Image (tube, one colour):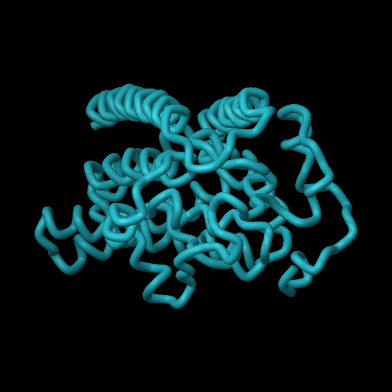
Length: 281
């Protein structure tokens, strides 16, 4: 059993790394060729900071919870744990529902990180990026990554999610996050139809608005249905996509110079703004 798990973990790492690299390169290329918004003068510095942060996240996650999601799925199977095994659900149905319910859990977790003070301090690292591109999808504080993984492990164990479903979910989530954070221009008519099936860049960009009522909307990363179902969907920013301001009101005048600044950001004591108090700005 251990040999099988080692083989699966090795293949998982290779597959996810290959897909991650391929999607990142493609998204950076197409968003550069077909930009939705004017580029920042500091685009490459921002990208290097974001990529440096994901390297820290990856190293720390490997040290603390190496391949944890896949390991949890394997352990659930070996010990016959989980909802789908208790009700003897067909394997194909367990796979499909696992992907859908894991996505719902990510939506709920995202809302939670916006509503709870100390969680928001971690999550705001992601929101202080003043521009959006594919690398923004990688801009998360390491402690948020660890907490997110812990929540995901609990959901996987509770469901008894099959290992292929967990692997597929991880790949899909990473790919769609880079897609919907990108600065890719998609024709409005195409976007209008596409956002019924996947979160599009125009849909998710609203979530990165400096205006609180817009930031507290469009929480989905992959499937777009949860925002519509739970009343957090907002079709467009009030100022329009080209003129909207991205980031956080309390960080408009702050420049994050390097990855150390991003790691330190959650402990910064700053004056509360209308944004943090919960009012519109």
